Image (cartoon, rainbow, N blue to C red; front, side, top):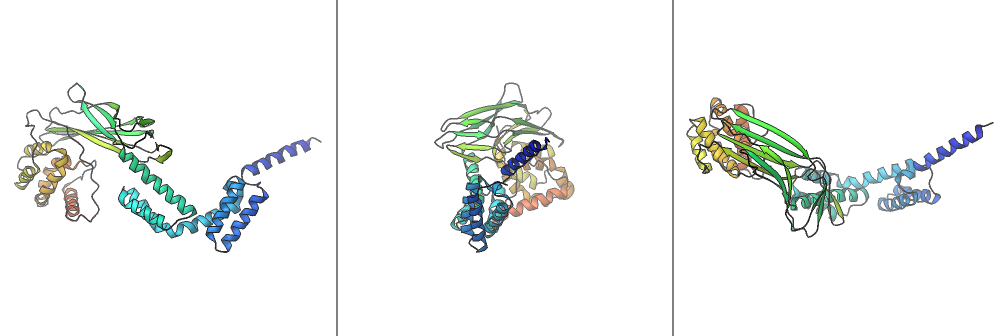
Length: 375
């Protein structure tokens, strides 16, 4: 008769499993849970939340309270979140659009309503996201490209400087450095190259207040042989991580360093920058020479390309499709779009939408890439 020890062993294992899964709890915790359930039935949600939190502490966690505790937690959370549902949806959308000013106003509005329980926890999470982004923006993260010695080679580094008064520690593994080179010939033939490099530059980075930090990221080549103009553009983005400021650990999700850009021109061309108005006047005249138009586009300062498009748009919208198709290489250069329109109809729609947004500041801004910097 050796079954008794075996059965005892099995029973002990089952009891241990029940204990870890919430099956065995103290009588005090169960009594506390009962009081929380009674408060909920009476409609006293605030009281039920208080009693439930005490029960969770006494039991050693919600899971130890079993199905009854889970049901009550779910019911209370749903009741606590419902009055804030529309507000939290608007707040989430504002953060998605990176409209941090609106997000801060919505946080203050939610705080004034005195959320409790699950709503209070959800608001704290939103607040942490907003504080994390603000701190990340205050770090002054920016990319810098400098000549590396050989012609067309550039050394790219990440620079940072902040004045937050204490050391900031970034832990963002798997950041991505993206490089795009674009060149255009006199005939309008384009050459493009893309490169994406995963970097550990932000995996564990300490930034002291008031001190400039520089982290090398690599060397890149921007070809220009046989081209009217060529440019290289670099961007750095994070996939997620944390940011520690003093005793606070904040989420550091999906923020970007300020990108940089270099432009190389055909050495036969003048180096003096072209004014946007000159580019627009040439478009107004019908842009009789594509090479001359591309030269003007390439010599525009990067931060003034949008201005040139603004001035040229009325004339461009009068172009017939064949003319618009002919000058599309200049539009691709100025727009900086990663996925530009494929034909004249697409360019006309894009120009119309862009012009409508420029004419009505109240409408949402078109999500265009930043102009970056030129060197």
